Image (tube, rainbow, N blue to C red; front, side, top):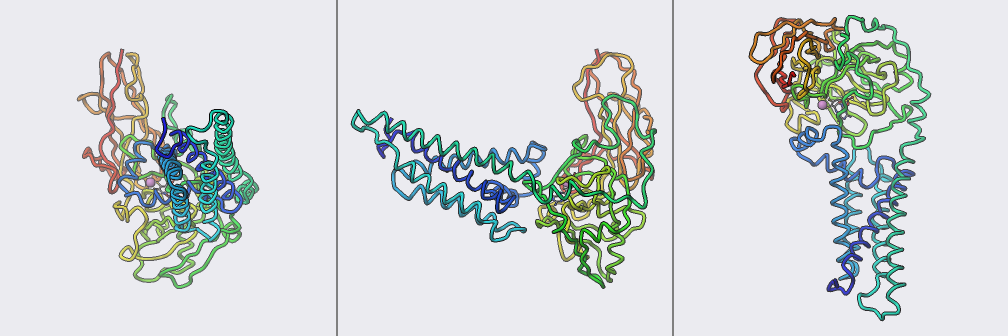
Length: 512
Ligand SMILES: Nc1nc2c(c(=O)[nH]1)N[C@H]1C(S)=C(S)[C@@H](COP(=O)(O)O)O[C@H]1N2
Ligand SMILES: [Mo]
């Protein structure tokens, strides 16, 4: 049980781990006070996201869905634990070697923090404090480590003291970590601002969702997605909380009259309301990364008119406060028949923080990665030949109109159903084009035309249902749509990369 350093083997590991916890806790507290969103693990995690190749990133999102960020934290925690253990073991063998590793970890955190687009010098403080505190704690604990074969009489108290110091450091670190998290989440200026913000009334309001838009079929996807169920994809590791007083939007680039719009100015502008279905390019056939909301905002077209777009431009390059970018075709933003919005409201509320508060883009008919920039602060009129958006640099397509698709929501795959009447139902979409027909096939039988609900507009999905007289046995159900131009949804299967999945959604059920 003795290591060559003459210490029990678990003790160096315990010292390393306790020191790491203490350091992370100290960093978390400093972050909560001085630099929200720059706690050490978060900045390293964000850097990892940035450095991960696009395909791997997509694979992780596909496997873990909304759990992609918890997964990243688990991986990071394991890495930190392994390195901390190693630092403990090495520090015992050679003083300063472990501390050097810990300080190098802190330096890595500092570099990661300063690499963020929204970093200030203060952003480096949490990781720096974490590194120094962990190094100091490591030396402190190793000094209190009892030798392996001390005189018998002194063994018990000395061992116990080490145990207490280690456990104490670890506990303080954990409490500080949790405390830092709680402090970060509550009572920020942004949270207060959002809480008191009264959404302006739309000057052009849309009629309420017609009753005929919804079928009374248990389990069918509601036409308007309840906010907590609205899919979410973004690269931001912690949800940004921008103070609208600090927010502004600059419109510049290939324009005659560049300008900057403040939050107060934006709220004076006449707002429009539109129902729009937003979709992620990473949505597999039959997948969940698509949702619908009522958006409130100011037409981007009018912002561009005010700026005066110059000859030769074909793209609008939007940037979020932290450097995320998207390149959107100019014509989608200037078309008076397309409700491209600088949105500030969602379903009658200010945008939730996770949705881009105070403002984001919503462009009907284009996948979110080329259009729906959240926390948007900059619109640069540009040319596709000159600049690429974030995901396009990772191998995704430059132009990404939403592809026609349809999904079976009822019954769920793998279900066992009773014979007789069963609804087969779901949603179909091709935003900004619309759907004219949906058909369902059982096994290799004929295609049956489903009943279509009333579409709210061509920018939203539409519900469909078909009454199935289910017969006992194992069955395969399949759906396909036809768009408003008469074009049938392709049966050709393609992957989500580079510009969206295609194919007919197919699932199996058992009828008893
Ligand atoms: N700032 C920022 N905006 C972003 C993204 C992002 O990662 N960061 N992701 C885009 C992608 S890929 C999609 S599909 C939509 C998703 O919007 P939602 O999370 O509100 O559903 O936001 C877009 N806007
Ligand atoms: Mo997306």
